[in-house]
Image (tube, rainbow, N blue to C red; front, side):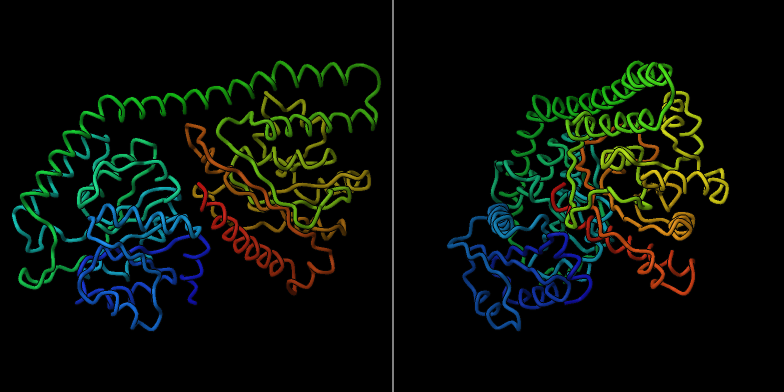
Length: 499
């Protein structure tokens, strides 16, 4: 199995090829698709030629759904989607069995899925205007593009392409009105109304000469059906589609405002006054400092566990039963402001090394300074004595090795500071891998999005084990970055099957 095939399977992506009497091309298309993806499903839509026999002769027989009679492309796709869902697939790349689409473009669809998880990817056929097509075919595509824009508010250059990647779990419950050629258009419109993002990606297309083409498109009947469907969809857009989109946008705004107001109110009018009062009464003892950390720990658990971050569903994996009782340098990839809460909720004895803007923030600087959080800008050597004292008192030190967040949540360059601290203090390194916080609250994003957030708690790395990762600190840091990139990719593939 190639690396690409492994990634496609890890992300739950299969290929579905609906076919009706394409005996001249189907074996070639399927074998080429199998070279790209290990999981290929062929839906024989009532084939009356020798398609099934040809598929049986392939070196690797694909998964086959055999419909007893020709029911149309829409019905074939629906049968393929159902079959794929029953076998645990999250996405399906669809392409035609007439060799018009290039299976070699499957990597294009994969990259689009990685960039836009949960989106419906539409393969925009390259050079479509220069291809020798009938006037009816050209008009039908332009006609479809126009009405699709009217019905959804989204313009796509090619709405009639059969080369697509569907997020299968988001298509559940979408009952199709039609079962034939026009069902693909209907699928896109309904998906858009239900909040599925649509993304266009250029793909190659092959058009043989007119006399060699095998087409089941019936210009008069199918165009009439498309026209009737568009009339129905335009009516539904007014009474259902556009109201749904407006309501969804308003809910996003309200969700964002609620999260901002809840955080600001809780911090300014509850947390900060309580900390002031608590620290002013009597001496600031070790017990008081620990109780302050317990308050932060409780607030973080309350916000995350009881869904006070609206739309963000949090999960966690701790396969090594980590308790956080023994001090360690805790490292984590950095995606958004939301990262802090899953980290703070793990244990009260947690010190975060913060950026300057956090250290100086008027909303919560009093609390974090009294909690003995430290600014990284002070320099590792300058704060090392304080860190040593904190570790001796049983506290772990949490650091983001990247220093800053990336726009696309990818793993950035690691700084050596976190690993230098671990070596100087001779304590374990405890890796945490987070997913989804940067999707829920993107860097420079305006709104809080509905998105799952997950934290993987990995196995501790002892000082001796860390030293084995390279001859010097630079090599050891590079090793840890490669480790994070691999672990994060595994986590992304696992999580994005359910977005």
